[in-house]
Every structure is written in C-alpha cells, then in structure tokens.
Image (tube, rainbow, N blue to C red; front, top):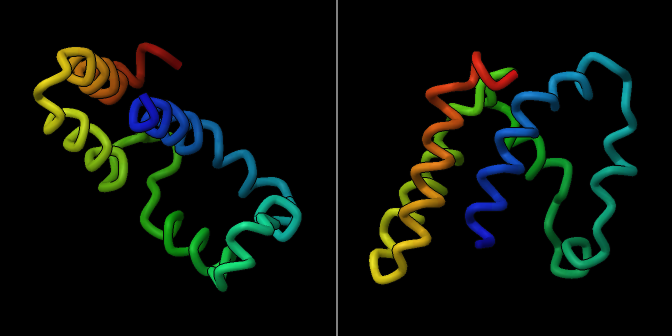
Length: 98
C-alpha cells in the first residue's frame, strides 16, 4: 500500500509540482524534517537530486517506474498487481485525466 501511495504522490508531484517552481517558494521550510536532520541527511541536496530529472507535467520517470516494478515483483499478493496496473494507467491516460 505504501508503494501505491508513493506512486500516486509522485504523479501529483510531477503534475502539479511545477507550480512550486513557478512561484518563489522557500523550500527550506518545506524540507525541514528533524528526523532526517538527526541522521545527517542533506535534505536540500536530496530534493535537488530527486527533482533534477523530473519532466514537469509528466509522471514518467525512473522513480515512478521503479515503484511500478516493485509492486509487480510482489507476486504473492494479487492486490499489488492491481496497484501496479492502476499506476501504469496513470501514465497512459495522463492527458485525459488532467
């Protein structure tokens, strides 16, 4: 279920996240997670690495397809296959959905 939610979140982020780039949003407030800070993760670098290859308005990307691939590998639960098919349909029908 968590992977499915990641796929949905990624689709929304790539589809509507470009609006964040158009406005001048202070990302330091958005990226202030004490849990990540406590283990020494550079949140800004992580965010920049994750968004460097994003095609805004299009969910097709390596992280998105990785989520679909992982869902497809969980073969003993049929619901994961349904989740993977649903996420894949978001890629195929992107123009019709939004």
